[in-house]
Length: 192
Image 1 (cartoon, rainbow, N blue to C red):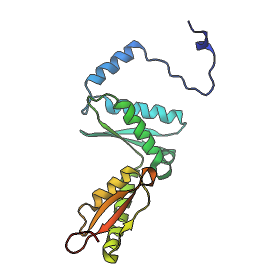
Image 2: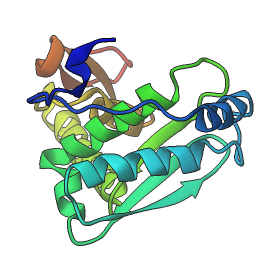
Image 3: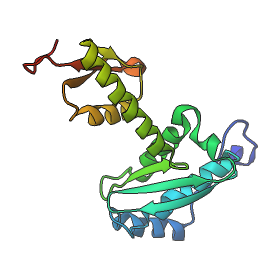
């Protein structure tokens, strides 16, 4: 037996293995995933609550569950800290939960972490800005290049301007410097 097991370890977080009974419960839940009532919403809420407790944040996690996705809404005095700068903490938590809970291809469900409808407000602001810039691009007849943004934000803008008359959108750049160009079309439907 390894004698180092009982020695204290600096800088590491150790998680003990779940008892066999808990592992059997998880195995059964894994077989029934992919739809409401599959236990994935509750499991994701528990995991998020544990992570937020480790972050020492005073918040509660509420579940909104539908056929396609699970929305975990974080509320409480520290909810603003969960959002982070430009939603980066929400995005990081969401990424972790999706990686952990959707590690098996059967029954995947998208987990969305939100706080006080931050994502909806943020998306509305992006759509408003995109339409304003598209109007400028058409009236000035010049390509408008937006600031670098995340893939999620770029997608919101591409979808918002997909049916906007007189412009098309294009993403250019690499990595964190990837940005959207709003390109006005000529009267014949071609680019300027």
